[in-house]
Amino acid sequence: MKADPQQRLDELSAGYQNAVILLTANHLGVFPALAAGPRVAADLASELGLDARALETTLLALAAEGILSQARGTFCLAPDFAPLLLPGGSQSRASIMEHNYHLLRRWVGLDEVLRTGRPAADTQRPRDGTQLRAFICGMADISRQSSEEVARKLDLSPFNRLLDVGGGPGTAAITFALRYPQLRCVVYDLPEVVPIAREEIARAKLEERVATVAGDFLEDPLGSGFDILYVSNIIHSQSVGQTAALFGRCREALVAGGTVVVKDFFLDDSRVEPASAARFSVNMLVGTAEGKSYTLDETRELLADAGFGDFRVVTVARASALLVGRRGPSA
Ligand SMILES: C[S@@+](CC[C@H](N)C(=O)[O-])C[C@H]1O[C@@H](n2cnc3c(N)ncnc32)[C@H](O)[C@@H]1O
View (cartoon, rainbow, N blue to C red):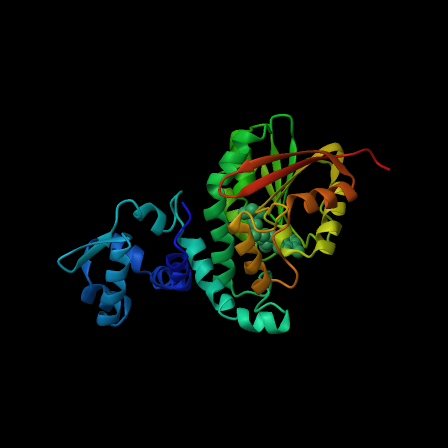
């Protein structure tokens, strides 16, 4: 049944309020503090250096949404949400929420972006260390489950050398290496990001099979002799020209007959569906010079122009898809 237009509009126009409440509480450390035990607002406020009245008002709103439980003025984390709210666990969304907190600043500049056509900020560089860590660890938060799904849906057993282009914290490479013991992986990312990937690889005790390379994938060599390349959530921050150039470089890094896997929030040809990808395109508008959500067809064309063929599409969690292609013979 179609939603009532007025109700839908009201939900959309006030949608920022719950997001701001949640992201600010996360940013100020409310959730880890509550994990230590139930508290009244005044005690929590003095522990976190916050105003008691303001904190209680915010905690009540979080309780109203079911994120916290509240009984006679004492607050604790709702059990269903606790593993998502707390940092460090396999289900944690703490870093991606912190990344979203930083993104808020860009989104409120959308009017200026619309006037100038220029982003409110460059999502890639420069970033301060805290924001960079929230972004990169936020990528781990959102790709843990989907990497498991990719590892189940793509048979990686025929492959031996995988390059994770812009691999961020290395979540995909780590997940693939754990499932496929023959696989050796390289996580390729910017010099300031590679130390975070190294921490994650060390935590998984995979230093012998998952290496890192620091470089700029638009300018520096990607390496060669790989039989599979994984390009996950990369092209949406690049212009069409940069994506075309990157695909050309990907081709050169692969052996003949090698496989490229491009994962992204692809739009269908209407460029309206899925709605999450249409909205994500605005995220790229406010944060990058020419990034956007690509359609599957235009990505397929760009790959074909770069010498790939034999395409297939595999859907994965939450409106992502994999476009899988094979490197054709040299011209
Ligand atoms: C949106 S994240 C995706 C991370 C990971 N592939 C995933 O799917 O979770 C984009 C990644 O590309 C990296 N990146 C962006 N521009 C780059 C460049 N020019 N050279 C190398 N890495 C780059 C970023 O540092 C970041 O780790």
